Amino acid sequence: MTAGLAGAFLEAAQADLAAAERLLPDLVRPAAYHLQQAAEKLGKAVLAGGGLVPPRSHDLGYLASLLPLDHALRAKLAAFDDLTVYHLAGRYPIGDALAPPPGTDELLERLRRLREFQASVRSHLGR
Image (cartoon, rainbow, N blue to C red):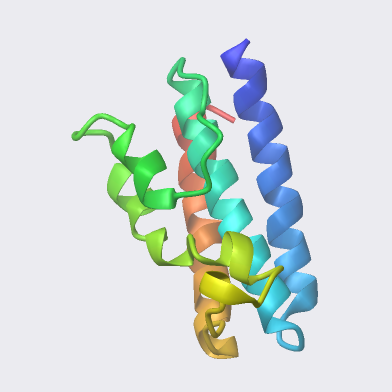
């Protein structure tokens, strides 16, 4: 079950990365949301690939903390923790979720780094 779930998360992450690519450079807030979603789904793919059922959480730091301390992808996932706020702020710029999105250049760099992380996850999972 978790192997199929890992593949489903990989496919969903690919869709979010493609959406972010299409939105940038013009629509940074929705692009930030899709980058957060891609990182979250890649993290959940790693968890599922390790035999864990991923929790219903958007917190990238928390998801990274569920991996063993010596896991090859733990630090890479944790490096995207500052995107966590965009699971809400990318869609609902109100209240506590109000957070200015990173600049276009920073988001393009995040997209590049997420593509590298995606390749690492695929390699780790043998896909």
